[in-house]
Length: 95
Image 1: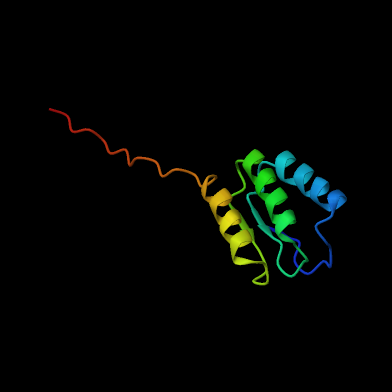
Image 2: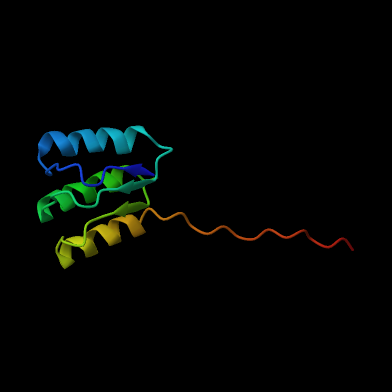
């Protein structure tokens, strides 16, 4: 998990571009903590676009101060990236 909480940043263009570079480029990092930073609904919308491109990202912790619509949009974007549960492969019985 990458902890970027309470860093006092806004969701302006340079920050979102750096976040995109980090999320798309680092495929091993799938969880991000972005709590207590200033994110507008437009910033969350851009973050959802980044998440759609970075399919490995499946968890983003956000501040509880964002709007309900923005939270739902982010939850939906992250749900699309959740890994599918695999089938349990049991050994076949020999006859």
